[in-house]
Image (cartoon, rainbow, N blue to C red; front, side, top):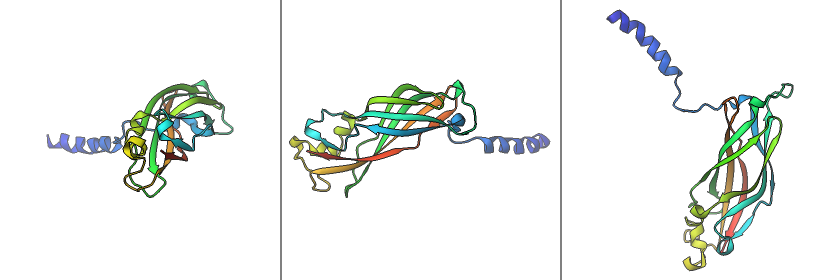
Length: 182
């Protein structure tokens, strides 16, 4: 019995040392997702007339093959699955809306790109959260934390997908600032 325990203990340690706490390893499958172009990017939004949605008119995601001398394959095509937008303050405030996480469908071919039109970067969930909610006229039109009539938010977007061969791919984030006014 002791001999079995002495043999199994190092094997179990090796097994558990090789396990990761993450359930999904990102090795990118030989490609990189890159957000390369924004058109119609909102930079100032009037909360009382926005209709509780902010969209980017057009956004391009490139699927770049890592090895410039390598040959691409359809197995390197990336099926986009979701995206997230994270908000931080660009002004003196500290309150931020909850992150937006949404499903998405599209394929960025290996060595090619995918253009997404009218991509929501803020929806009702963010508009009805602080500090944006304070800017509605019925709520006084002033950020109750800073006393300002303008809330400046840094927005950071990134995309998640899988190559057709099953490798997880995450884009580097793209960032910009939007001012929200009454």
